[in-house]
Amino acid sequence: QVQLVESGGGLVPAGGSLRLSCAASGRIRSPYDMGWYRQAPGKQRELVAAITSGRSTNYADSVKGRFTISRDNAKNTVYLQMNSLKPDDTAVYYCNVRLYYSDSMYSDYWGQGTQVTVSS
Image (cartoon, rainbow, N blue to C red):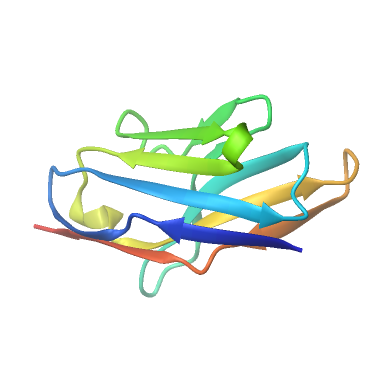
């Protein structure tokens, strides 16, 4: 099992910044991808950003140029730096780890979620 602990959410005015962190522990071993998803009230969960074990990144179009994902493999931790926040960014943000057993077999693990609220 893999456990994920998130931190860094909160309330921020529009235009502000937040940094989310997610530390993985337990049976974590390479290769694994890490990412952040979010879910706003009444909406489906969506990918915000992801980073592979090789540090390739992928971003939702809505956050490109504003958010930056990074990881520290020594600490099994993923970060999401969020700048120029907008009210539309308000959501519960979930950390994800995808642990690979082969090219086609993997398991997904999720954090408990952290609330990000951007006031207008």
